[in-house]
Image 1 (cartoon, rainbow, N blue to C red):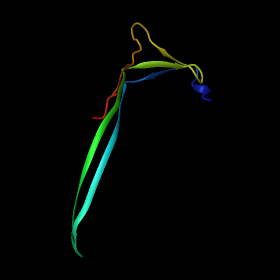
Image 2: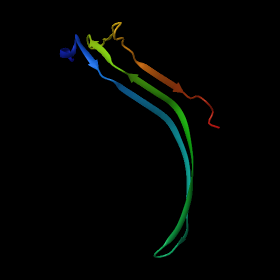
Image 3: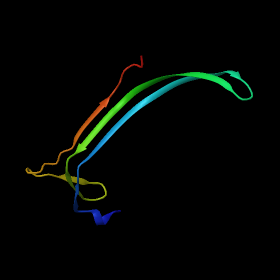
Image 4: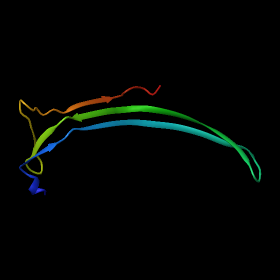
Length: 97
């Protein structure tokens, strides 16, 4: 599909990716206490629970890669310039309360 890109070496400068995922549960109750032609008095309360699901962090200082074909990619490194890709992934599995 992208034949001009096949067999070429590409260099990607430094990049970082940070991702966070969470669930958010909420319950809101509101009420109008008094109401007239010109004014009204209302109030409400919201209860909210945030539940962390996962956190991910990826850092690439410098990477060289070669696109071989539509399905394969090779990451190129040398002893003087090794290919590194740092990452962290954390999943939270616990009861809500």
